[in-house]
Length: 141
Image (cartoon, one colour):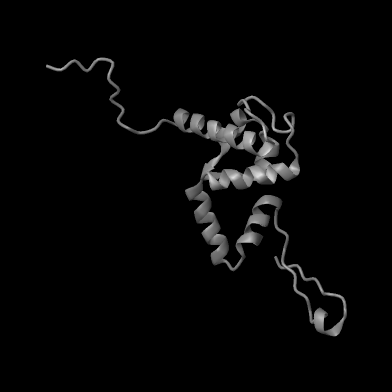
């Protein structure tokens, strides 16, 4: 008879706590790289350690490269890695949203801008280049 006391019987599934801890560590690494710091602790506020709105866009880009779904707005709302990590979604769910946006005819850049800043609407230039007149702007909803 084998003694199984103290053995984890939950299987190999990663717990939510482990996922959040890994996300937090990734965020700290990204923040340190973008802010050109040796280290960023989970409780360090992004703006308190030198971040600004331009660097926030760089953080979002690096986070996406690392497979994390993050919007600039999220970084403003949750300014530490400790508070941001639990609200970050997985890239797979964002990829399905992105596929829906692209399938609807929006370019990836416009879909990104809509996600980050809200609906801009689209515009078109009505023969402005050839006639020398001002461009006509049309909002599409």
